[in-house]
Length: 320
Image (cartoon, rainbow, N blue to C red; front, side, top):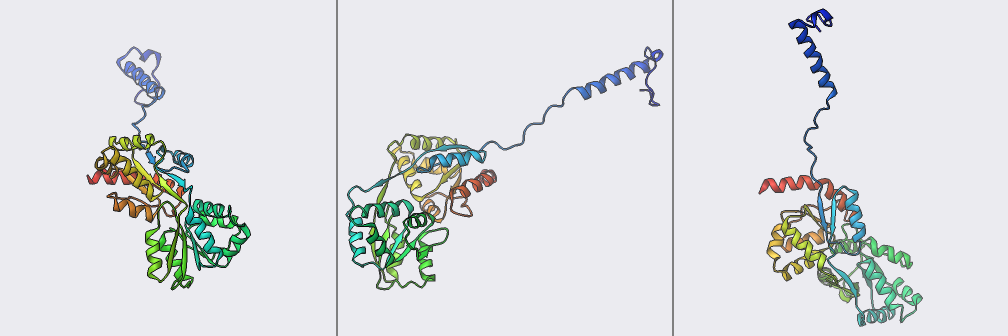
């Protein structure tokens, strides 16, 4: 095009002005036909989440991957039922004799195991009637589901986040008298010492009913590998869905003689905790939880962690 906006005529092509116009046309054609180079991506790298979930390991992996993160699952515990469990049958005998005022169910797995165990020696109808004569208390949704399946009435249900504190608060809100009462507590893995103490402070006699114990996995290889990879900086997020998980991770780290190294590396990651009980244990063991979900459920934990982890990582790195 010339300065007036006209295309060059054939007679003008040979002139200097015509050559300039031809070059301009060529450059415009090149500009519109060659694709522009994409700018470097500013998207964050994919999060790498290490979870220590055991019983629901496959579900955890699926949840993490559905939220766009990479998942490493290192099972950290197993629930070992007690083969010889006289406490369960002592509980059943006392229950049938009417010697309990309250029965507290803390877990779904434990509630089912207890009911199935004692029904091997006593009739189901007698056990259900004896429970109907007591105040039945549950800590969270999992024992609720089991008791409903067994058609057992629930008198007091602790709200979220379902710790021993909510159990005590729910009893007080329901005006359940604990003074001079006899209370059976279905345990989970280890005695609920804080709950026992709070019940005794209010005048109750407490009977512990253990059904299973937490042990390390039969194969600790994946857990050992996760400990080493944490130290190597392979993970962005460490995710704990129970207090006992961190106890076992540190136990394995101690066996490998890298406990201090693992703790230091873990604190450089985003530490996600399912709820107050796990967070309290983490803090007691020298680890700083960065977040708890709005509800103490696995789905909420994964979603909210994946939403917040990049921001939390930036904060951690900028503070060092």
